[in-house]
Length: 327
Ligand SMILES: [Zn+2]
Ligand SMILES: [Zn+2]
Image (cartoon, rainbow, N blue to C red; front, side):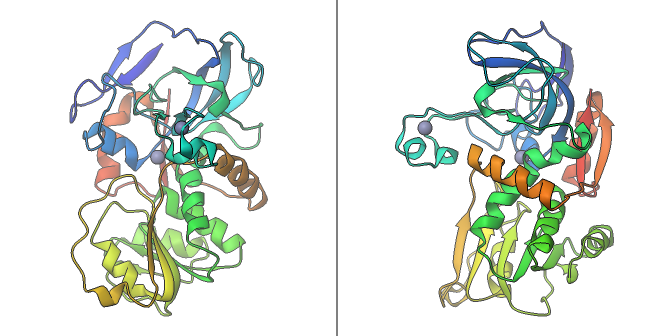
């Protein structure tokens, strides 16, 4: 097998040959068909997250086929198409796991962060955390659903059921969740980098009621806003855009510092929340919704070996929709 490997924080990924991994008990080996590129991969490559398991293969939006079963795997079969998400393993025993909040597990493992991910021709995954995907849509179209879709969905649920929904940062997650929100009958207001007409046009083509720069005022007070961009200065802007009692959900794993702001912007029962990881239940729910809502992802496809160039493009906002690598 081959993989794009990160040796040290901030280094370029290197394309390396490796022995084909042997799945252990409960694990499967998967031949990768496509792997989405998420902003979290940038945080891994930049060393912005703690306890990265170097050398590490990033990538946690994996679609592939089961190629080998480890001992005691009965839930998946050879040749089955599966998705491997960010949540790679949980302990099953901590207070969070035992109360249905495995996304907050005290002893988790994460794909492409603390275990090798999908920027590779093959990977090994814990079978219990893989999602059977069926055969609808091709691997490239499905890959962004594995994180942008899933964590996007969790953040949408946390945003509540208000009608007027703001989305700050209209990339991979934004363009998927806008479609879900429209399907639910909500109005979507898309906030992009100032002057990013390409993202604004994509938002309007997906049914957004309004699209503009993140400093602009939406035409109506929002019931909730979700922030997908890792930019702390969006927090006070989003708080200013939501009505009394409204919610602002920060959906990223990492964000630049939030500037100080007057308490009156939070007052009147506005709520500021963050989303961490996903549960397997989120996945089961979301894949059902994605099929019902006929979500269509907008993707740009690149060869696996171009992962470094793709990460640079993502960093500078040159990707519209979602980027996907193919071995
Ligand atoms: Zn992700
Ligand atoms: Zn746990």
